[in-house]
Image 1 (cartoon, rainbow over the protein chains, first blue to last red):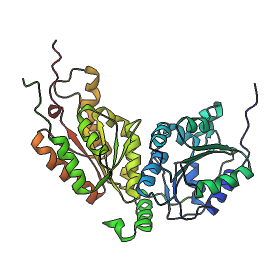
Image 2 (cartoon, each protein chain N blue to C red):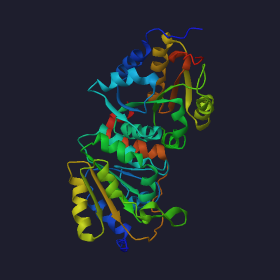
Image 3 (cartoon, chains in turn purple, orange):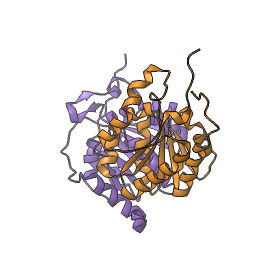
Length: 198
Length: 176
């Protein structure tokens, strides 16, 4: 049997390149490491989910439908995505053109003791996305592929999925902001102005 | 025992309230009691209607919709409430509004015993997680109950579930 290809990129370097390319995109991060990764450079256009495992992709769908003129980018972990697995089908059926769904995939549950997730056992999220009608779905292993994907994630004009394979290096929780109501109100005020409090 | 409910007008009343209060996103897992309301919403081009694989998806989706400035409603049967409980922590912690319209099973002449555990627990588990629960039992009160709940959730940023009693849906005679 062929050895499966391992992720070698560093998650913080991957996210740093995403932060550099984010432009005016609205970003949703899933609970755990992707929140901390994006917390390295806090931004009011980021909604951090500290809970509700499995929420990220669907929260992104609601936001994308509400803001069709803006690019909405969900960035979450493989464990979080697996818990919201049905969202692949729900999003694929609705197919909003302004949504990018990105999994930073280290193939483990890093918060709880590095137990392997299903992606470690060969479950192929790119294949799942393709089966669920995502018009663009790729697995990303290299810096060159990443550079191309980052511009597509933020500049794309169709529903897109990227499974970005990274190594298992862990980082500190680089996010002090935890209060959900504050994160929500800040996001809405920045996006909607005075209408945020109608 | 009246076994046949008269022609239903309350689903249209709910749709009318949705229009009145500016609901633009509908997330649902189907229930026979919601069939007409789902059809009315699907036929409305001003509404984004999303069919879910499981109810908790709708809790997250409508939070995203609200982040983007849109009001929504989540339609489901009482059995789906149990699926939502942990996802409601997103709503509680971040103080999102959430309007849940729940058709009840397992409470009024239920013929399927498997519906009883969740049906009898629906209101209790919602209240336990912090959702305000209101009920409508008669067709002529559905409009007002839904309208009042909508005003309350969108002006308080707190989740409200309207439970539509199984008696509204009607008694299904299972004796033969």
